[in-house]
Image 1 (tube, one colour):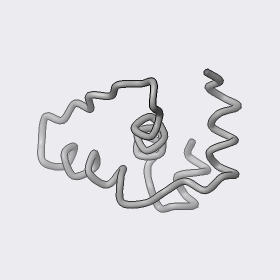
Image 2 (cartoon, one colour):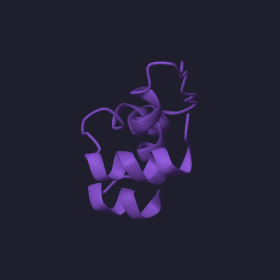
Image 3 (cartoon, helix red, strand yellow):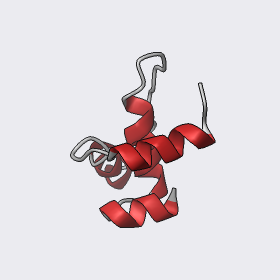
Length: 63
């Protein structure tokens, strides 16, 4: 995830959250205890993973 994150200038956490939030069968409730965490959570939705990266993540976490 770090490699994918560097491509988008995002953290591994943001890559994972971006992918998880786009899954139809998964409910996600991100935790945030301070403003930085809230900002990081919000930055998971202002971009999209390309098909190649989605496929790579799917290979790691098949459903």
